[in-house]
Image (tube, rainbow over all chains, first blue to last red; front, side, top):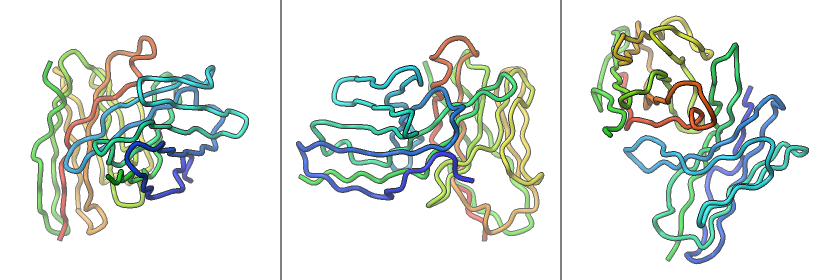
Length: 114
Length: 116
């Protein structure tokens, strides 16, 4: 049962344009969401997060939007740069018996074309 | 501050063997989580340890086990290896459960396990 889904396995965007990565979830108990970025041969690195009580969080070129009624979040990167080419994972946090658990999506491979 | 380290980085084993992977968290981090990454499946949660106790467990068979030592270093073990166990195994550490910053997990580079 995939509770966090990234339905687009890949996305290609022109340099300078906006990249929009999407993520859907099914569990309304998730109360915090994160985006991670992963380069080949490296572990994922934290990018940006959002609490379920907010609908938007911005950090430089990165903005995450949360639509709780639709159980949908998205990551906007603008302007897109070649160094943004990587696999992006969305993740949701759930508390189980006082312990946090991260549930990840399958990832979306973003390619920025010059 | 040194990041999360994992050893070995690459490993080749044959079916039926067992393997032990090691993870050293960021200094001061007491929570260590393990994930399995395979193509198309994303990161699948294996288990989480905090202060030498397993606090959380994913949906993996009993062949997958782990432990944490008093210095927060952690090991995971897979017994009776199967071909499907070939994957990147990632370890992540986070600080104590206080405030939102504890949600952010810091990952190591992973151990690439190939089972032949």
